[in-house]
Image (cartoon, rainbow, N blue to C red):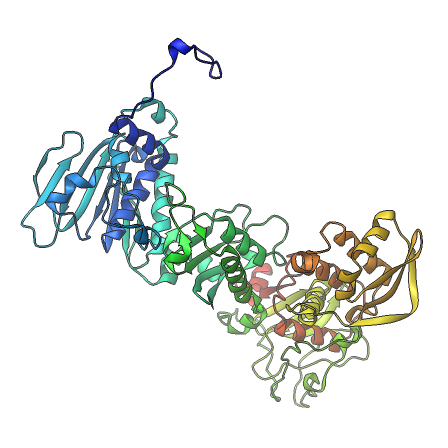
Length: 615
């Protein structure tokens, strides 16, 4: 055999000539038809474009021996059936203007011809008003009457029978079946108004009836997806984004539940993936992958779908516009603290006969804990100063409910009418956790993680999104000096403007010493040297010109971590309750800046189960 890179002898040179149509179609099939699932995808695309209300997929041997797609759409007229199998024959587009504003799933006009070149293909179709259906055999070209209701059936048998080398690359029947089911699932999520059924070897393996979008999401992805996600609804100029975004706790180790659609078409697009991931940056822990189903509606003229033969990739005219819209949509959906949803949980079921009665709620005026956006906090202690609105009403004399032990000399706070979502503080555990009681049971709060998120969100609110915004700065009466590495000195000098935006003033004190002369007012009580070192280390990993835009949140997270209350600090009940009330109104307070949870609920039912009550 001649080596691949060996040069041809002049006498061996082959003439340039046109390829035969069948070979051209087989080459195209190499791009369009990768496996049986590719056939399923293309044929279901055609069924949906035909206006089908019900699509049925029948498979044998994972789709290798048979892929049959039946629909009840508009059908194909008898005279157009032979044309449908020609290369680049389609009813979807007819001009460049149509191509630049594609509104259908298919448009290239090469799928049927490519599939027919590597299989035994037949089409049975009937249009409304026709007295009979007609069957076209792609191999022989024979066209004859057949029995069928209105719609189309495309049968693809013995895939890759004419190209045995391609068939060797297919996996087991079970693997190919899984890919076929996944292809239909993607369509089912895009079109909840259409019913889908999948049969394999004569057995029904999946069926989804027409439903609302949320019901279809639950049917396809499971009830847990719906329960562990929040609705997404956002409009930005010509872009509208809807769907559902999974809460951080629902993140997975694999990115296998990330569905993005552009004008109803499932796509794998780097812009959308990066935008979604960036919205989860400060609420996911480690390398966990978010789950979501996003639907982007945009003017077809602003997106190019003619990028890849399989139509799974797109190119946006303004990718930055789309990226910002998707990120803001998910960010806004995740912002609301789920602590507020605790009050909407279903009340616990009947308890054992020997279970204690639920503690009564005490009536008092409603509390106003609206977040003070833009309000400058002079120091961390302000977080623990109960405002007049948060003053706790005295316990009525008639009440005789035992109070859990807490810091000496601190009165307990009764629950207001309707109770607080995170309840009232009972005690502090090992200087790390706050134990609180709400009507559902026990709430356990990681006080450092929770306070870290609160400080972080306040820092972000101060800095804002506008250019020129700076964190309020507080000069130090005595500059804090520390021995610095050459890298730290260089970073402090190069990023002086960025440091000022972040409320820090760090200047050289000597060749190997830096002086911290001002810190963010919100963190005035923190360790200035430790804060400066951490921020300089972060700045050393990013370009100073882009750090505020790209790494601002990372820097603020670092600052918040150093500014948050530390473990082993003893808190009074008033301080604990103030933290709980702040959590209830602070965005994203369910996770700390590193993506770890800040609180957990243990219901009375779960507590009873631990002690075998009622058994």
